[in-house]
Image (tube, protein in one colour):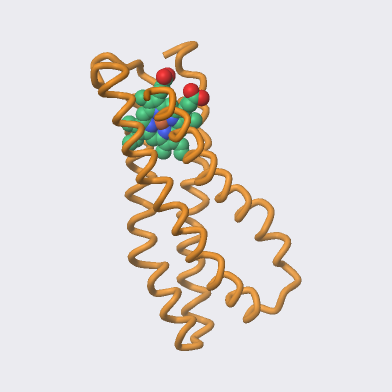
Amino acid sequence: MLVLAIGAHTLAAIVWVGGMFFAHVILRPAMGPMEPGERMALRGRLLPLFFKWVWISIIALFVTGYGVLYFGYDGLSGAGLHVRLMEGLGLVMMLLFGWMYFRPFKLFMQALKQADQKAAAGEFERIRRVVMVNLVLGMVVSVLGATGNFWG
Ligand code: HEM
């Protein structure tokens, strides 16, 4: 059971962090030559799909993370420093995503519906910044999680 939980935990991290890496490092520059309106419309189609998977990943990371912590380590007191850091930074990532989803992302979708390109671009910039911060945090957390048993 613990093996399945840590497997699901790792897969969820790959989906979330890998998706942010692809969006930020590959898709963004590749969309450069597109018309601004076309670019926004594409974002309006891809963000809801990606964010649905991020919600699934967050639920999986949360449930399996605390599952492994309480059934595999006897709680935080039995876990190494890397797990405490992962929990803290992981919760920051989840809160940042939640705020971004319910504020800038909702406003972005509304602006697109009203064909207000200027407002959509402003809200997208806020989304992009949160994704950038979460990408860096997600990479740090993943390295901590995967290497921690060797030093934590
Ligand atoms: C609620 C927050 C979280 C908790 C309580 C938690 C808990 C844990 C625990 C207990 C382990 C096993 C550590 C070990 O055996 O040394 C683990 C591993 C791991 N976690 Fe988390 N985690 C959380 C969030 C995250 C997040 C947000 C990510 C990445 C986005 C992440 C990525 C990983 C990775 C990559 C591993 C290593 C898996 C492996 O290769 O062994 N975790 N986590």
